[in-house]
Amino acid sequence: MDETKLSPDRVEVLKRIEQYEREGRFDEDVENDPEAPELLPDQVDYLCEKFSSKVSRRIANFVADHYFLKLIKKDKLVIDEVQGEEHLHALKNGAIVTCNHFHAYDNYVVFHCIRKALPHKYLYKVIREGNYTNFPGLYGFFFRNCNTLPLSSNRRTMINFMSAVNTLLKRGETILIYPEQGMWWNYKKPRPFKIGGFKMAYRAGVPVLPTFITMKDDERLDESGYPIQRFTYHIMPPIYPDTTLGEKAGAEKMKDEAYALCKAKYEEVYGVPLVYETKEEEK
Image (cartoon, rainbow, N blue to C red):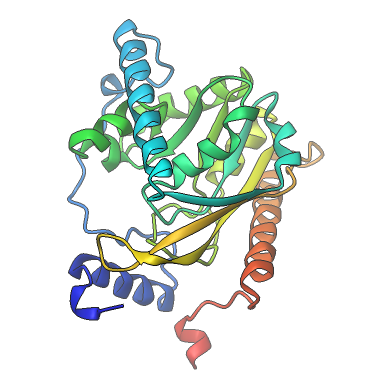
């Protein structure tokens, strides 16, 4: 790998990831994204109830599917294997799927690997506010129309978000969440989980299906000068709500179990213990 040909932007992001790991700032964004406009309630149709939303959704999903399938066909998006497909039965009556977040395309990797098991044809994705309000071009079109559920800094919008998530889960839809929150580019370790998505699952009475994507270097380099990553998608056993517990304790239990499965998978595949290079450990 020729360091003189590495993308300065990616070099900066990787340095920031190292810094944030040392400081234990696992849920913070590392990308150089501009400040995002606030998403207001009338700017998003979470349940796709408007005719215009339905048309845009159909077009966006058609275009996105062809776009990413072309990347797969050209071997630019490489999925080597799917393991644990026997656990996909958990999606039949509504579920939350969790996955590590390390690439702009990882949501399509999830969709591509589970699409045949989806009882409905769509996979809903929880995304950050800025991806919905501030992303230009084709990817911005995808972010706004491919069954996305944007978070918001606006309280009223978030009330609508939570209501929509509950409605979707109770009608049997599948929702992808990233419990680590921010995307850390090409970061292989599972990061500590936030509880929000597990509360959603517990409240709706649906299982969480933990999944984890592992990576290995291809011989080819991407446009940033780093090796293209080859993905293996791991599907772990579903975790069901413990109805003997309250929401907080029940969600915490689901979160801890999901993280433990991802940690074990990381250690199994990479053959090393999961260790974060934090300041405390350096001492």
